[in-house]
Image (cartoon, rainbow, N blue to C red; front, side):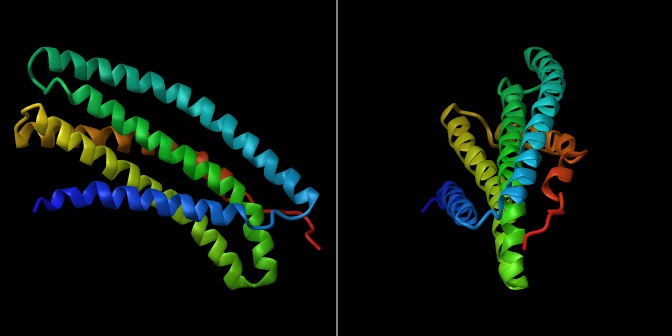
Length: 196
């Protein structure tokens, strides 16, 4: 039996569970109008931040892809390496967007849940954080699995497949590095309003 098939299955299960947790978080009470107003302002700021950040990161990825493509055409790298680098960055950016999306929607809901009990607030916060974690793992594992089978079908050697996987990881890590610079402020903004 080819146990590698467990990887795409596990990735799909992780993404489905992340979807379930996001749905569960969004069912929670978002609080009174003033709390929702602050929460909406945080969401708009986060969306603006991501749009600005991703536009600058796109320049970096374009430059790095051009360098990798040049090395690939010169015969130093596999022809699929530039694509692997871009895919890594794309899926990392997608995971970052999903994480920011759920985090900015969970802050007010966590505050309202914590009014009921510390345990309930922790559960909402933990569920929203789990969405990001499961999305990162699910998207990465799904892409690597699909790409593994694709490259194998194209006749790539294990060394060439490994080279592509390595550049996928570098692309994802590069995107994550940029995302960590300042975006976290929008996921930790306190709800400084009266909720009584």
